Image 1 (spheres, rainbow, N blue to C red):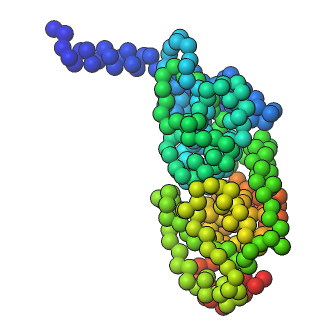
Image 2 (image 1 turned 45 degrees about the horizontal axis):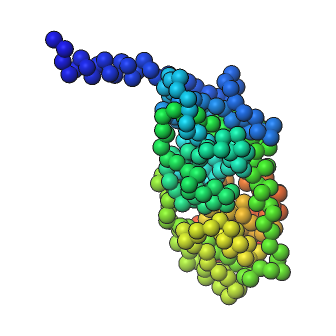
Image 3 (image 1 turned 90 degrees about the vertical axis):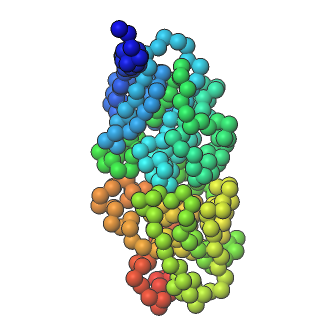
Length: 315
């Protein structure tokens, strides 16, 4: 007797047998584009879903089909795509080549796993509008995946190619350089924000002592709440409005360092110091941005009292 259960089993087997799981690392023998002799972008057809495993391998489920593709995607989100600095230095670094991929695939879209305001800010900065973004994979597709070498937690793929990709990305922001004579304030303060923070790393900072220390030195300061930013160029201009930038550690430091040029950054907390010996890419990015943008940084531990903060700010 043929039952509903038998029917479900048949459908499941058809589904299962029509799927294939493939794994792609930087060294996998699989077809790809090479953009500007730097960016290796793998070409995968009929993708159903994908993820990053071991921080260096795209695990991609594909559907076996001979139908002609009608959708084209550039899939850039990795494992920690919802963490700001991870996304910037793992995924946003590939945004500069989207226009070149569009010359090959005129209807291509950026494929994201989740909508985030910080992602939209960077996409807009690179002239990628919301009409060029999708969050779901449709059948009969071709997905383009950057070679999985950019995960910040992966030390084994700290390659010259990744360094070149970083250099190309950082240099774009080097063109935004406000001279000291044009800076409106002595200090710009970026308090810790609350919107879209990565949950496991979220924390709060009491800024009262910092403000008291700044007011002791100068009354000419301003505060920037980056949660209110709707255009990345506005944030760059605001961050560069003072020679001295006070901000919290981790993502605010790692990303806003990119927007600074010939400035002193005073970093509340010392979390990135603890990470340097474990994740070498974090250290390299911090030092590379400072070198290219002529920035310096001073850590301000959270246990310091007002007079100690003033002493550091005056150095």
